Length: 215
Image (tube, rainbow, N blue to C red):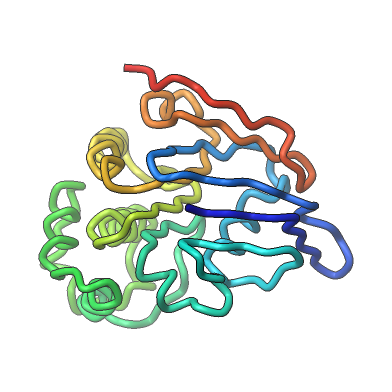
């Protein structure tokens, strides 16, 4: 279970999250929506333990800020903006797999399904890949890890239509084992994948609704 109690975050005295309280149970698949600046990415970063915040956050009974290694071992994460990592692709895959006792082959197999010829890129620095290549690799790492929580911030933004469709199919398979929290501007494409919608506005939860999965 994921529990947030009165979570608030400010940047230079500007409130970005204000008293957010939520409980997320196993089996829930959540679309996180809201305009730019609503606080969606900040909320995700707090869940990952990247930001300190007021209030409390508990993931499986652990504080993600104080127990980052244990918490991150349970999470597959796709950021909105790929990090400027200089490490070679092969090393990144090995590192990501090792954090949660996953065979690197699981990740490599997913890159191939997404249409990424990873074998030609293994020795290139991650930062030198194209936007689409980075996104496919990050998705493969998130879905290929042995994790039971998925946090994805605009995960399909740089995907071509074919890769987007494959990603949605792979995500649906992964959801059988994982809680998912997905931020997207295209709520229509998530309709078949979510059973709860959270909307943030100016750092506050303004909508929290259960919805039926659309087949």
